Length: 280
Image (cartoon, rainbow, N blue to C red):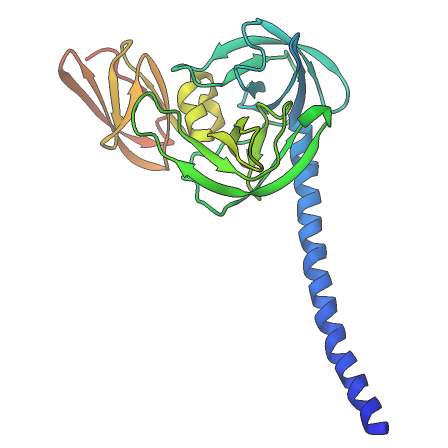
């Protein structure tokens, strides 16, 4: 009997540290997730329109609100409720080019923190989270991962990625962010007939489609004549008159094709952040 008791005591002694380690690991995850929510949530706003509700979040050095274009629709202004309960009027100041489902709102002077937008390639399997107001549940925190990424095949395609984060009406325009609190996408749509098949616009697409977001990332701002094709480091960046192109620190070649002629320059970022090729 004594041998059996000794064996049981030894097994318990071995199991206890293992259980403690598992508990410590889960506790650490919980602490990180709670800290992430506390950091991101104050930047998220609740948007009320004549047709329903939506989500937005603060971006850029001037503190504009980024959300889906379908949230305000054709309205020029909406009601915006802040995390502390304040109510502001949000004025539409820029709509994304190329019919991309994004818009910027100005709510006037405030002290809300801005969320940074990612300009890095996204990978399937990346842990992500979102804060929004699905079905009226205010500042709801959900987590998941990037399920798939759909590349752009031509100019008509709108690059999106799929996530299995639960999203519902009211989440539109909300941020999808990584474990560092960096926004990798903006909620845009879900498939109602399916479960956990939801889509987001990639952050770098927002940076390209909304020139006023130039201060929200490590980017070159390129000024060229209207409609002119621009290439950065050999890759098509879009058309003028103004483009915001994510880059890494270092030397970059910028080319604008004006009247069939190439205007070229080499710049070193961040020493040079604005490239003006409007004149030869």
